[in-house]
Length: 400
Image (tube, helix red, strand yellow):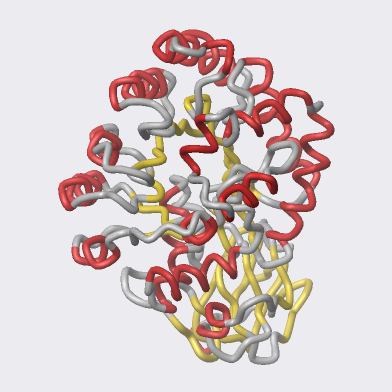
């Protein structure tokens, strides 16, 4: 078989199967037309020829990393709020006084689409430099049709400027905009009747999210958004149980959500519902760390019920200004006590599931998109334990 490219003499973490990393010690990967045609032990490969044959010299190859929860496109910063929290103010206190999400909304509304792209590119480049090949980008800092459109258009433009898969998520139900103060139900009507249909018609939305929380939106309001998403044929995900148990995980599972994210306060009923709906858990240790939270997600319960656990940066200006998925893995291990295998699964196979992309990404096997991260490490644990170093040797996107 003639291929475009072959990588040989490599250790592989294929992530194939439901257990472990699927390690192969003397591995080979072949690619044609941007897709993997072979990934496994070199001894099992048929005779292959290629336009380019690359000796990896024993390096580790994993699937390209997937950051499945980010708010990457925004303007401004909220460093002053970081100072306020150091002085003892809570996230909820800051939000109640006009800070928090609405602070970023004001800056994002004032920025042009080109400015949003320019500000987001360095954040995106930092992630790509660590082997990220697929990223989710949410809106939610516009909170009007005009400005949500601008954010989502900027996210699409990032995919044109860089060699990366971008999955866009409409998060109009992120916070209540000032022009709808005291009229949350009216704003939800605006989302469902006007904003979402228009953005879907323009091809800007891949999935729909909401912030179900006492400082966000109620269960009933979130249900309205999810029903509108379903009418548009879109899958949903949810910011759930971050600051309190609103029973959002149960509601998300009723809509067969792709994921429920944060989950510090989720209970066993929520986890059981997620299990039955095959809803992934997305753990966001950057926000846990940055907000100095003390309530850990119930990792043992998630394990016991076989929930896929993804890990993401939650890159955003207020609660997780993190642009390193490697550091997110380290935090997940040190703060949440995830194992090395769970961390690597969390940024590959489980992250693909959380985006509804498991058929095309997240593992090294024939038919999947040839997205690879090639590392200067001898064992997978080195990718999780190091802090502040980047052992990436090469990033491969669609076989190139």
